[in-house]
Image (tube, rainbow, N blue to C red; front, side, top):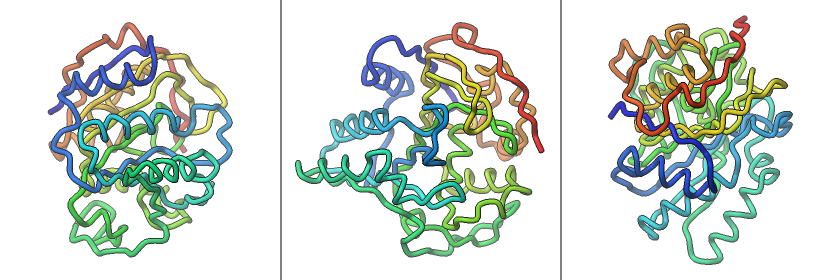
Amino acid sequence: MNSVALVKHTQDIRSTLEEGINLIGGFGNLKSPVLVKPNLCTIKDGTGATVTDIEVVKTIIDLLLQEDESLSIRIIETDSQSKYAQEAFDFFGYTEYCEEMQQIGADVATLDQSNTPLAKIQFDGEYFKDPELPEILSKPHHFISVATAKTHYLSYITGALKNLFGVLPRKDMAVYHSKIHEVITDLTRILKPNLNIIDARIGVEDWNGPTTHQIGAFIFGQNPVSVDAVMTKVFQLNPENVQHLVKLVNYNLGSMNPEIIGTSIEEVSVQFGIPKVT
């Protein structure tokens, strides 16, 4: 389903998330474990909008458990050059939140994928050949990418797709930078997220600012390529200039021009500067 819901955030987070998820037909066919991937790219969030707001993640999990209280839910992240996953879980409140959820009987926990077993995945991609990824990704699961709205000096944009970088089980992520579009393309083909949500209340120029823009919206979709294309248009930038989007469209994994339901792009769009790609 290539339809993308664009929803103005005018009330509380729960109302906005319920509206957007309902517009795209719900969570889909849920199965355990549900892997929730926030963007926890740094401890030093210089903008207040660089990393995913934990209140958004808490609300998504609440809505998931409302659908099926027996679900097993894991909030996932790996180490990167700018942070350790466990440090991020502690700093942003995820560790405490999961302990509270477990006390009321909910199977909700963090998962530091840098310290879990790996499994080889048979895949012949543009960059990866039979990569070793966290074992949980090789088994049946339901994947939800919960991203923030940003541009990026290397990948042009960072939304639902660039957020997938946070499953790679190595800290020296710079090794991937020269082939970042190929890496994102392969991760999307391997993971195929089931639901993609971008918190675009505030948009950030470059991955950690300092420039920010008030957009005041959330973006929802089952197809991350279509979701990121809409985000790019909200920035008044051209998705055709995003190499990994072009690649993924050529793999028939999304659309640059999906049907948009809810709010029109024109109602929320803000002019971003063209990313200074190095």
